[in-house]
Image (cartoon, rainbow, N blue to C red; front, side, top):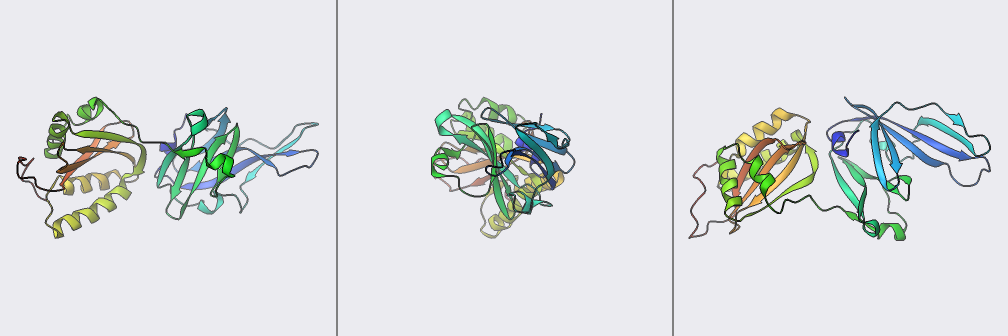
Length: 273
């Protein structure tokens, strides 16, 4: 079994499709399966099970005949196929998509540096598109909300490793601050670049941070590994902490930035980047 998060940070090396062609010749060929040949992973087959996308490692099969019904062809995706332009590109992130009418996640949007493509299981049809769907479908879709942890127990378990930033974030949770853990993942090296820029900005603006240089170094060391983001906000809003996790929930790094300095709130620490 493969999860969408497993694709993040990997290059799409090839796209293979299977198409059903009806013998009566009516209409366009129907997409049955798609294989994304992913760097260091192999061919990932996309199949629909009712309203769910099923992703598995599986080699493309040969073309075959279906007697009176028609025939199925298997070949590389044509140039006009939505994912064809992204062959050779690396997946930057994914965002799950929910269908409101059935209250279920039915697919996801796969983002690349140069654009994005949605892969959906719509009424048991495999749909791969970069364009809007007919309004009846489009209006029934929205991006799935991030996973949240109302009890904050998961966040407290993660923050058991007592780096200075973890200790301050844990204190913020215990004091009643809000926390959440996102559902999507991003390659560590992409986040390293983003937070390196923030490090330069906070230094130039003399904004107090905790653990930001260490976080940039930890993310760079992870390379293309997928990283999940978490966030903690102090009860008074004066501190914002970002927690970086592996796909299975282990701690990668933690950093905090002061948003403002309330007169009655004791500082979490004197560390500056």
